[in-house]
Image 1: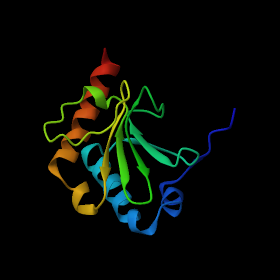
Image 2: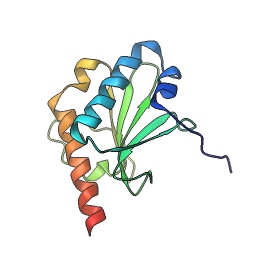
Image 3: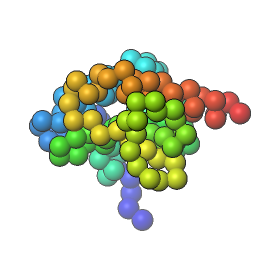
Image 4: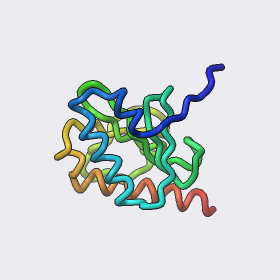
Length: 129
């Protein structure tokens, strides 16, 4: 089994296409606006950064940033159960969903922020029960 390689968000950006770096940074800023005390864990092997109430990806994490060449996924570990009135979420997994964010402007959409807020509320409720 391969060892998980942790790193910094800056290292993740260095692995990201130049055009998508501002998008990834904008999503990161939004994550910390919504949850200033978020625990950020960058797994370079996954090419992603997770945001959560603690460092455990699937149980304490609620969102992740995963850069691609032409977009950045803002993913949600429990996204299938999130309210999504703007129909931004994509994916067919049992639990996970994501939003493909192509620009800084898209990262600023109110629906994107609402999804982050709802994901945080969901994780808080799940961990309190």
